[in-house]
Amino acid sequence: MVLAAGLGTRLLPLTEQVPKPLVPLGLETALARWLRWMGGQGIADVVVNLHHLGAAIRREIEERPVPGVRVRWSEEPEILGTGGGVRRAIGRLGPGPFLVVNADAVLVPNLPALVASHQRSGAKATMLVRRDPLAGRFGAVEADASGIVRRLLGAPAGALGPLDTFMFTGVQILDPSVEPLLPERGCIVRTLHRALVDAGGGGLGAFEHEGPWFDVGSIAGYLAANLWISGEAVLAHPSARVDAAARVGPSVVLGAGAHVRSGTVRRAVVWPGTVVEADLEDSVATPFATLTSRASAPRSR
Image (cartoon, rainbow, N blue to C red; front, top):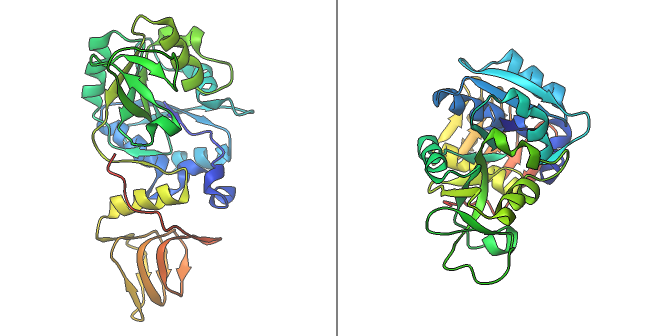
């Protein structure tokens, strides 16, 4: 399942026009990137939940389907949150364990290793986690040496033995048996995950992701993800144009129909159909807004 119903408020004003799952990442959308990866992992049936600008998301994927992946939709007239979204869709997710990802997370999970960890631990849910020095401030997941989460978001208090501290990547495996613990509306971490930790018994597992991870929910994170995808190169759609008066690179993404008429463009994303006529650096240029970030260095964890 791909969670794609969010409002994308941290990407305003971009998400007033384009829902967050459709923002360009390289030469594809965030949602298409996940669907392509899932197809490559042998996942042929995917449920996507929808709310904000949901019709645009549905139209985009139906007009440009990912080969080998069937997408079904879970409409949310009122946004239900990550926990409520999974609960509403769980009847469509099959009888066995299923994968859930956040559309705004950019990473390449080691799915076979994650699945093996989930099966080995016997947990009802397994979070893919990452190390981050700010974990204690923004949502610590603390696990023991066997990969069982013993403390979540600071609770329970008290001594629990040596624990490793992580943050959630937005990728997880769930067993259908968790359905009674899912809320009608609300955050999956503060409801399902919280309940599993509080119950004890090793119900929540954690498996460490060791590769790059980006959150495209902010301008800085969005730009950093695109710079990671492009590397030092200029990643340009065949229909993009760069005039002789312009200089482009390094680390630039030029979408379909983008046109750089003049100026120097580097460490930037130019959305499809956007015309650039001035210098652009550490920025995202779209047909309706240009936003700059000075915090775009990629994070390796």
